Image (cartoon, rainbow, N blue to C red; front, side, top):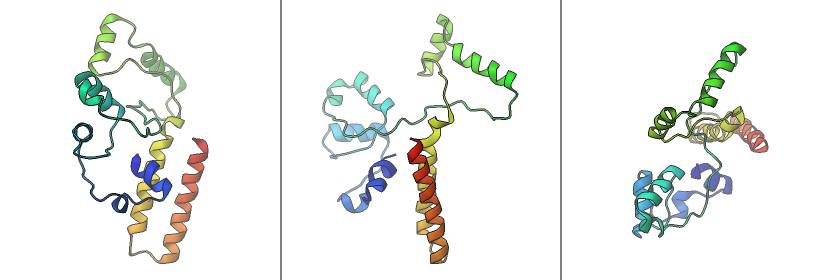
Length: 167
C-alpha cells in the first residue's frame, strides 16, 4: 500500500529518498520504531491493535503518520452467475451469523465480529495495487519496443485514473 499510495502517487522513489531500507514483518517494524532502531516503518491496523493491547508502553512511543485506504479484510466473494436464490441464502447466513453466544465465541477465535454487506467497490484498492504491480513489471521489461511499452503504460495509467475517480 505505501509503495503505491505514498511513494508512486507522489513520484518518490523510496530507494533514493531513504539512506537505509530494511524489510521485516509488521511486528518487527513496529518494535523497531518503538526501540528507535528505525525512524519510519510500515504496519497494519491489526498489528497496531495487538501492540496497543500487549505492549502499551511501546505503543505509546509510536505515532501514526499516514493511514491507507481501507484494505478489504477477508472478503467473501461469489460469482455473479450464482442463482439469485442461492446468493440470498449465502448472504443471509453470513449477515446473521454471530448472534448466538456460541457463534460469537467462534467468531472471536477468528478475530471477527461478523460480516456486513459489501460491494465490488471494496476491492478498488486491490485493483489499483495489481495495476501498479503490472505497471512496474512493464516498466522494467527491456524486451518491449519503446512505442509498445508507452502504449501499454498509457493504458494502465488510464485504468488507474478510472479507479481513482471511483474511490
